[in-house]
Image 1 (cartoon, rainbow, N blue to C red):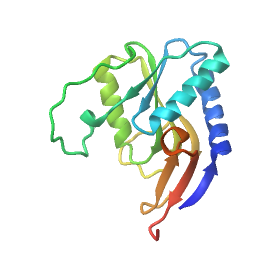
Image 2 (image 1 turned 120 degrees about the vertical axis):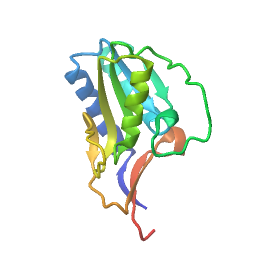
Image 3 (image 1 turned 30 degrees about the vertical axis):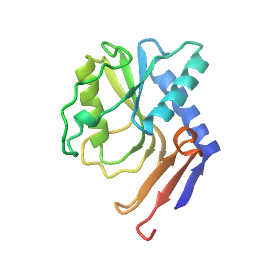
Image 4 (image 1 turned 90 degrees about the horizontal axis):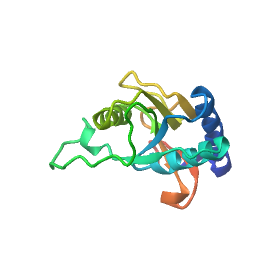
Length: 174
């Protein structure tokens, strides 16, 4: 596994993304940041903290479990839909994930958001965009574009979940 960027590069990318979110939305009014479980949650919380600090105004944040909306996983259980921790109706929702690849996770997240309420707008922030889309989805805010082959994997590590910050690539030979 080869390191592509370390904790300081990761932080710089997220600071830039936070400023881009504020600039594009002309502030933070009516914004809700939603982290897609699991790796999108710590990244989303950090972005929320940065945006809130830069604007001097608290931005709502919640976690989103998309397992009920996945089309690429067999459903072997029936489960009631949990309530979302924040109201997304008529809000600008910033979905946050670690890596954008085929687009299926984002599609499931958008379906979930629309089930919870009619968002005014959904924007996407990802730390890494690696290409290879199967669906016509594009990120609005990208930390880094890292072109990969289909046989390579991008691994994002966060202090909150892994004890270290960094972005790594793993090839087929590993």
